[in-house]
Every structure is written in C-alpha cells, then in structure tokens.
Length: 547
Image (tube, helix red, strand yellow):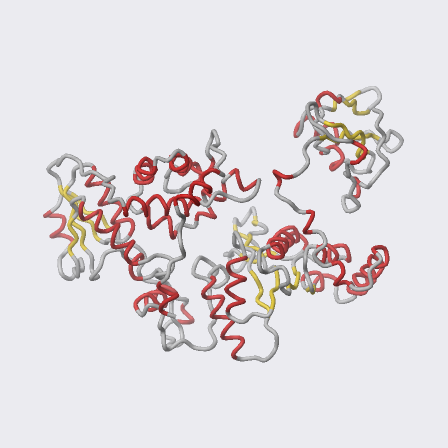
C-alpha cells in the first residue's frame, strides 16, 4: 500500500488550469468568495490565473491564509465555495481547490516571497501549539511586527496536518514547506516542549506580553461504552498510525465497524470504501453491492474505489442526513430521546429526487455505463419504479414504503410496470434501462428559444385566486384579478412562461397553451415538445396557436 498511500493525484498544468479558469463566469457578486469561511477570495485569484497573473493570485490567497497550499488539498470546498459556484447550474462547479493548488505549487516552484515580516514593535507573543491555528496566528503576528515563539510538544510542527492526514491527500513536503515559510518569516519553534511539564504557564506569562493557547483537538472523544475496550480505536489514533507507517498497518482486522458520519466516516472516503469492499469479499462468495451515501458531492470516485475493492454492483442511495422536525416547546429535534436528538437519516418519498440525480450521475460517468446499479430511495408506485429504471437502475429496492404500507403494494407496483411495458411495446424491463439519460443534458444546452404561455380553461376555473396570488407575489405579475367576475386576467406582455400558475392551481384549469418563439430567435413552434404525462397538470394537449 505504501506507493499508493504516498502518491498524491496529479494537479493541473498551465494549459489545463487555464482551461478550468476559463470556465469561471466572473460573477459580479462572486458567491464563491462570500461562501469561504476563511474569507479567502477565490473569485479574485481565479481571475488572476485567467489573466496570467499567477503571483497576483498567490498574493490573494496569502492575504489571510498562511496555509494556502494545505487548504487547497484538504479544505472541503464542495461544502463552501464550490457549492456556491454559479457555474454549478450549468455544467458543474469550478474546481476552486485544484486551481488554488496550482497557484500555491507555482509559488513554491518559483520561490515567491509573498509574506513579509512587519517592523518590530518591541512586543513578544508565546503560542502553545503549532497546528493550523497556531501557525496562522504566528504568521499574522509576525506581519504585524511581533516577536513569536511557538511551543510544540511533538518533534515536528503541523499538529494533525503532520500526524493525521494521509500522504495521498496531504504530502508531508507540503506541510514542511508551509512551516518553513513561517520560520523564514521569523517565527521561532521550540520542539519537544510540553507546557505544564517542561515549562509552566506562569513562566510564559512572565516572559511574554501575551500567550495564545492553540492546542487544537489532538485527543479524541470516546463513547463511554467503548472506553478501555482493546478492540476500539479513535479515528484520530488510527489515522495517526496509518500516517506514521505510510499505510502499512499489519494489524488491520478483517471486519471493522465505523461509528460516526462526519469527514472520517467511510462513505465519503474512497480508500476506506475500497478496504471495506475487500474485507467483505474475503468473507463471502455472494455478489456484493456497495450502498452509496448521498451525503457527498459526487459518488463517482467512491464507486470506482469500491470497484477496485471487488464490489460487484451498487445500491443508490442510502439515507440523507437530516433533521426532520423540531419540538417548538421543548426545543429539541425529533425523535426526542430523553431531551436530546441527533442528525439522522431521512428516507422515503422525499429523497427520490436526490436518488434519481445520483443514479443519473453514476450511469452517465465514463466507465460506469454497464455497471449494475440497484435503485433505492422513495420508490412507492410503479411510476417511481419506472423512473429509476429509465435512469439506469437494473434492479430496485423498496424499503420505507414497505414499512408504511406492507408488502401488498408490490402487487400494484409489478402490475403497473407490466401495463407500462405493454404500452411501450417491450418484452423485458431491461429494454427500458437507461433510456432517459440521453435526454438529460447540461442546462446551457437546453433549447431556450421559445416560451410557453398558460391556457386557462374557464369551464374548470373555480375562482379560488391561487394562480393570481402566486403570480403576483412569486412571479412576474402577469395575472391581475377581476373582483366582479372573480377570475384572473392574463397579461401576455408580462408573462415569461414560468408556469407557476399551472403548478399551484388545484383543479387543473391551467394547461400549456401558446408556444411562441422569442424575438430574435429561430424555431418552429409546431415542432416543439413541451407536454409531460408525469406532471399531470401539464398533460399533453393539442397546442392552439391562437390566444
């Protein structure tokens, strides 16, 4: 395992980083920068890269981040800047972490001296701990002219960065480089020194103008039921041993239970998923389906790792992390477990759109086109089952609906599928697998040359005014209200064709009406397909080209 454990994935070249930076929309309000918890400005450094100003990009990264090359590798950008990226609405977020890595790698190769020590102000600060917070504090203080001594109990600086993160995610040389930059800035690190043992806090207070305690969380918490259990190990301890041995752990058991669903849990870690699959395959001759978590940006890397570990297929999706309800009087999430609650897993009908999205992602990924995938997540009716099949599921699992309604619903599900097959003139369900994916394309490739106006069936209109309220308060004010007739009045000049009115109308009195090509665009309205049998209020109708 050593060679793979020590091998970091390849980063961008000058050509490929320019291609990625060119995808940036250069948004006016830069939601990526607003979403960064470290207050780095990715919009600015991406723009600098795009216009070939790599040193300027490095300066932007280093403005408030002394550990820029480390953050580029380990920051969960998918939760922050990349999640907020506007480009995600088109064809996927900008790889902000990858671009930042390229910039900081170039900074290192070109030996750029971005950080500068400030004019000495005559004051000195002691910092206890050389983890991320201690190193950042030291940098900021040196830039302001303070003398800085860092007291570190270990033989190397970096804390968890040095002792807990695998080499393939964060190479040791990167941590050493960042630490050396801070030392070159004038910070002094005293190693193998434990405050409270080798030197007292009172001594530090007497010697320095101030003391900063930045000891981090090097000690893990353990559930009381597992304390003193020789078969139990914290994730922090395990990762530290894995780092020290460069992945060559000789005492790994064949079966492991991971408790906890955050960053160190199995489902989002490709290497751990691979190891789990290998362990399961050693213990059975049956086919193994790996059940995939939806609490992740993309499943593809994890799926490919599971394939390497021997998985025969996949089940998508597992439950979605959620808090479903809160007791407003007791102020506790539900279910209430003796006055406390936890983030738990949501299943059932509500997760179906998420399951379908990941199913489409897996089936469309290069190399996974023929992969056996068992669809799961919100299947109740034959229509739900057909949707999963059309998006690529080769088998189906029905669980939450069985808990609620019992096995009897399977009769209607299979009978409905049988009739659907007859309508589609197919003899085997396999003939329907994956047929819908060819029609799912990036949003920037959709035909936006036309708009569809609503058509109101006055014989069905009950005068409730729901369409008017939604259009006035949530859309484009294309509907006004006639108090005498108690009916909406349609103003075509204001309508953008959003169809919100049809979605909220309770009795199906609003259907798709006139299809019109937008000014300056080309197309034949008669050839445009806008009907849908699944959105029942949008059922296909013969389009009347008259108002």
